[in-house]
Length: 270
Image (cartoon, rainbow, N blue to C red; front, top):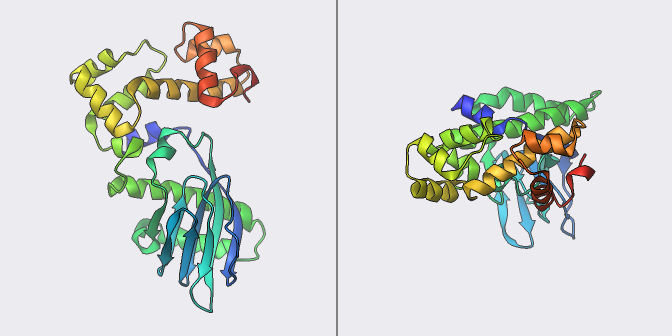
């Protein structure tokens, strides 16, 4: 599974920007509007996280609370000593409709004690983020990004995500199909050819892929090709060359699909 995980997540990055670290005792009257995701690393204290469109979430143990997509929210301490926490905005080198991001539920809550393999890292992370040391922000942001990657592995290992691309990695047939797509995306792949390689019928493969990945085979293949194209365009390759490298024989079709996926033309990307 580790090779598959690395293969599927290659080039996908969690980026964090720490916006608060310390003891929080106040209560905001307004919800904080975030245009990105948000993660709270709660070290101590009891708190309630309130959102206008969801039921309040009570936190009474040290926890990681992750909102992968934008959500208006506020943290309300539940005792006079407040809550000691580190909060960071999260973003990705992909859109919020990326299959990996869409695999996550609206909110993830994991008690920190369950992340047993990284207890020492968590200790160092809090020590850095809550200190007045030089370069603490840069170091703690790198560590928080790494902790989110570990969180994802924890979810996979414990089968705690039940839909989307991450959940699909528990199905051997779909894993093989994803390996084919990711390694040979510039070939003339079809639903029938990939179904044949993974050893099931075309109709069965289409149904399983759509159910688990929550995208059709063709839509996933197209999205992956466009994702690779974005990187190639940043390397200053021509649109025509990139189209050919990601499996489009017709540059016009590539330009149309690129704009559908990203909202802008490939010539303006990067």
